[in-house]
Image: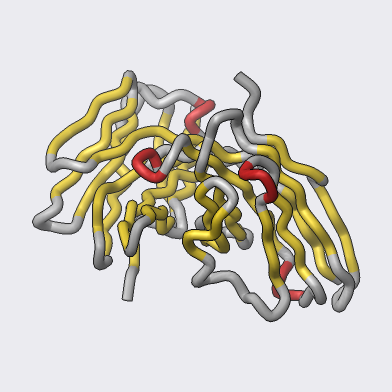
Length: 115
Length: 112
């Protein structure tokens, strides 16, 4: 079974530029999550999708971050414009459904550096 | 508010047993998960406790006491490959969806 795929793996941009990350979850997983992980800390949930609908985006900085999950499969997370404090690893995860939220499968992440 | 506390670092020797504690304060608590993350790698699921008691999976065991808002991960017969960060994560249910709130992680170093 293929795991969660993410791209790119690394990205370096200047502040005020825009960037997009892509995620393909495990086939059949209805729930998709985007996390931000700052060095030395645990993952912090940004947004959660159930199929193609948003169920929790309470911690997403909506003035600069946006995400979508078209057709309930792939998802993209965008930052525009980026700030220095956005430097982090962006992790995508998926689970079978809401009843399996305790067991999430993570992708390798995208390491973003904002200079 | 919601908070999780776990030690920042633990060091142990190969073959030993180590316990990583986690205390939490949260509303909407449903259960406690544990994840392992090697440097530069993705978090991987280890175990989940929804009920009080001990869950055993090979060399790893996890314990939960809901009345004490406390849990721990027990790693036995430590191997060098167990050197990693370990995160406890509270499963919260608010509204219609569950989501995980992660602690800051415990960095385990296994020495020969």
